Image (cartoon, rainbow, N blue to C red; front, side):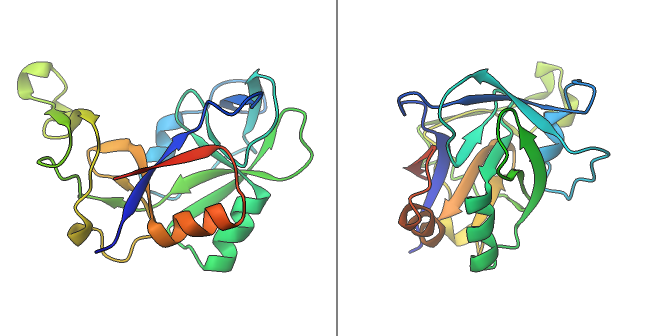
Length: 187
């Protein structure tokens, strides 16, 4: 059976940077939720990121708003592997001349395995968020049902779009390239 892994920022890397943003050309914050909808995004500007904590760059990181930012090395790997489930939006990172990209994941799959997760809670009508009823308000120890994933290499989970999930072959390819910044938690 296929194995899947949740990507999570590896904050324990000594001296690593932490990014803030994305910002537009005036320095106003862009809507970060648009990068979690599983849809192509059209931007009127090249987004930029500042350093909320200066340090050494890592190849894959997330801002405090949960926007994944990847290096040109990651973008090139995705291209070589033919990963089509993402949109790579060119961005600028404060103090960097190399190319950086927002990783916009285009697939959302209804695959969370409530029974295998450590704990899940769903939005209810009485929570006052009618647009979220039925979606997840909390997930701990996320597990996916591999029979519902199909052939996806990278995706977000329906109802809990903060989670970024990758296939075992993609995890192995990222590790083989020595790409830094994330840890992989089996889902």
